[in-house]
Length: 398
Image (cartoon, one colour):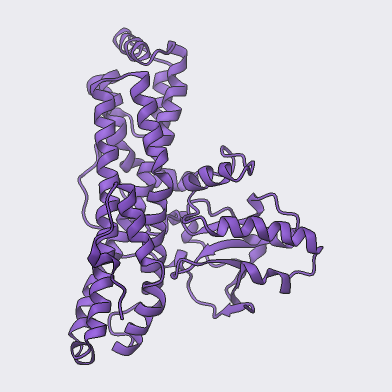
């Protein structure tokens, strides 16, 4: 496939979704921006489109993988990145420029663009093809997938969320930090606003009651008092991942509600009302997205139950079991969030306003961009919750 150059336009990162639904107030008033379905931090998204040479590590994203993180031999490839399209295909983005647009190419076509040593290019392409099968490029899924491929990447340096994104997630983290705060500080817990504050307080307890509580927690976990900060770091990283995926879910939910209204309007169009195949297409898309979102919610409910169980009966075994269970779901939850983000983001770019596009154009977009990979997302969501794919969800639109 030849290099596809897309016209310059605002990218997915630069077009924030509509505001998410209202949420319960956090412990103290916080000014928040709506979450983004693609996971990218607002600070990164607010920057204008840049030349390829000026790319930074967009490690907040679900659908982007900068190739300089990988042990590639062909130096030119390290200036590119893998991207997920609305069809859930993985492409190589060779450049992105405000004036020239975006250059995308299939991994298999790299040999026509790089006059490198053939053996080196084939080795790099073999690795990229394996990574192309990864469902999400979020940092938590990548940690698992890269380990499985035997690729050594410094997780502490490269596979972490940006400070801006971590700041955005503070209010999501409060639900996970409250049980620990209450165990240690009681009423003082309201003063702690971030995991950094909590780490500092636990490292330097200044009250006898607090110290006694910490010793009690350490005993239940089979730890020394000096090992509590390390436990906190692990606890914080696990639930930062859950907070990140919740944020992505909220961004997708805001777009999904708008998309649902768009489908209703499309279904009422005279051309569509008289077309049974078009009606089935719309119903299948609508039902599939509802199933995907419901299964994603099921994963989060499971995480909440495990957190409650941990603090109801705190133990080292309980903590490790909870950690293993959440990490085991990283790739499936990441796949669902990424799939929703790229499909809904692709729809929003194609139809930025409600009145744009004729019914025929909208139906073509659904067939060509929304349907591919949608059934696999349904299967991923149901498998994550140990359920079977309903017959209705297996039906393919005509």
